[in-house]
Length: 123
Image (tube, rainbow, N blue to C red; front, side, top):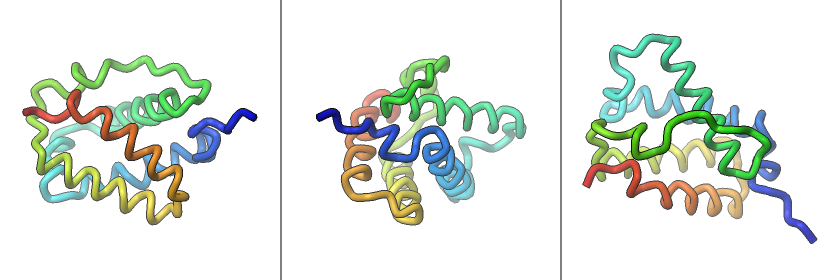
């Protein structure tokens, strides 16, 4: 039996879009993380959101082709710290909680996100 992909289990494109729409305002409004969106135009923020949705959909097994840059290039020079990473994880957890994402899917999301840490956090 084929288990449904994480993409399918999260509600497909629409479900992942709801996730991004909940998570991004949390990150942007955070006292520490908000600096990453300072002086960004609305168009740039919307483009970034669309790239996030595409990235998540593609990596969760969906039929979406991600056309953005890799995570190393995308986050180079941003000086993302361990503290930033921890705060991000907390907001992601709050988003999953508020959307009532089932535990197995939460575990799968966390496993995927943790696999990206070395490509995102400046060490």
